Length: 92
Image (cartoon, rainbow, N blue to C red; front, side, top):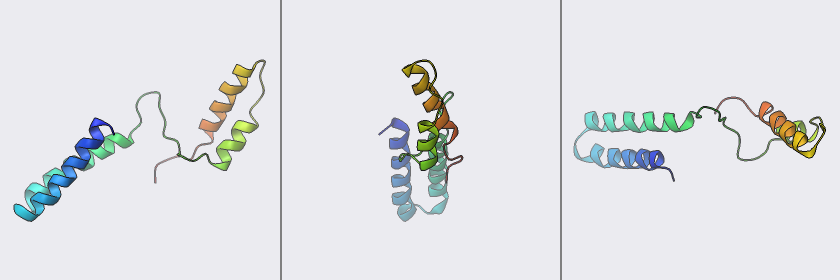
């Protein structure tokens, strides 16, 4: 688990306890902080994209039917590019 994920979990856990003890105002601040952290985790870093954990049929077929190229390396790179292009767009 990453540091940011741990921070988000701790913030939400703390918010739950404080909601019971101090009231909603302080809790709302903690929850807003947790939401900001989680949102940052969902954003991909420069040069990275989000992909599904399970390979989709569209990604599989795109990779399978990628141009062969002149070498195995060309095929692997082309297949990878085709699969990334076929990935589902957006996070649900």
